[in-house]
Image (cartoon, rainbow, N blue to C red; front, side, top):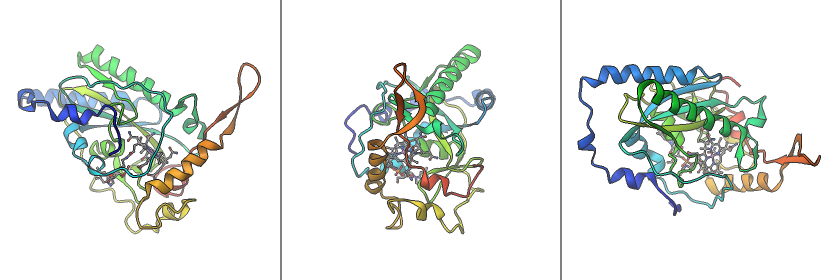
Length: 268
Ligand code: B12
């Protein structure tokens, strides 16, 4: 891994979990809390939610993988240390429909979709504390700033599976979702990787053919090749249709979504 910043996993590995074990009698209460929290999140239009156990996420495939290629983000975000004694994640998936491309446009250090997810994460954290006295902390997007690998988190929360396009395929919206996680103090019962949902089985994989850079040429996702396309997207911003206070057009980055849009799974 090439990250040199803060890594939540290092802190997590140093905690004495034996001292924090849940007692059996708390479990019913915890199950009810988890269900209420998911229901609260899913009240939001275009949202699905699940709970993942942090130890499963941190032991998942993304943490074992070596990231190749150099991706420099200009996403604005502060590094945050983790809430102590947190063992669960609320994982949120927000629909990014094809007919609302603006949600994915990168402008002034962020995207509209990500801003909305951050706001809703904060509101859910406040709701949890207000109604149940449980502390929560919305996590940053970037792993090197204290975030987690979100596709793994979504799989362990039971929201979907990782498809042949290397994206999380949500049960309802396929790959057309963006993900976010909120850290929760204590341990809540978590979801499970779905076993009854295998949407890529028998698929002709149009996602892999749709890649303009042919990043799947070697039979799996090739990060450096994909990065070339996104670097080029960044170098050629498009007009958003909006103007700044001086009347100049506001330019935004439209990231490639070819492998996402070509996927036949889920609602568009
Ligand atoms: C850095 C980054 C990028 C980089 C590098 C991508 C990469 N995959 O390495 C660049 C800029 C190239 C990129 C491109 C894209 N990204 Co990006 N990216 C991220 C970020 C910040 C970290 C991802 C990462 O470094 N992964 C680690 C590398 C080593 O692993 P990986 O390639 O992801 O593959 C792992 C998983 O697939 C997992 N996995 C595979 N099979 C299985 C099975 C199980 C059971 C489990 C648990 C896990 C698992 O293990 C693999 C490693 O072995 C995440 C946000 C986050 N905090 O997670 C968003 C994220 C993954 N990106 C996202 C998107 C949408 C994109 C793009 C479509 C561009 C766009 N329009 O935004 C493309 C798609 C590329 C693709 N097909 O994978 C979304 C994905 C949503 C979804 N439905 O899955 C995320 C979650 C951000 C978000 N806003 O929600 N991205």
